[in-house]
Length: 114
Image (cartoon, rainbow, N blue to C red; front, side, top):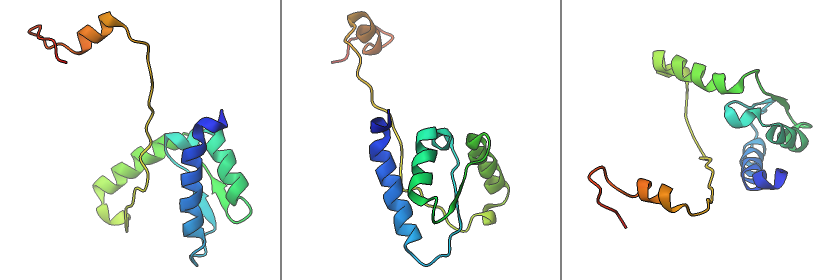
């Protein structure tokens, strides 16, 4: 199962390593958002950085994003800078089902799109 996450884990590790190699005196890594609820991610970050920093993940980590967005909406000065280095996505492959494809690739007036 971990092999499914390896690309994103390596990217996160690289980014955190670049930040921690700078002299910022960082003592904590706070994991928030839906991905933070993954035991695989939390275990990986603890394995890689647990000796340097204390790794924290709040209960219901997804809510931290929503609460932060609300606070930012009320007072934009609460955030000094914003940077999103990664976007996560999922790709899937499905068997071809002609009945589903015809519905998906047609307009309401019945014209088939190729």
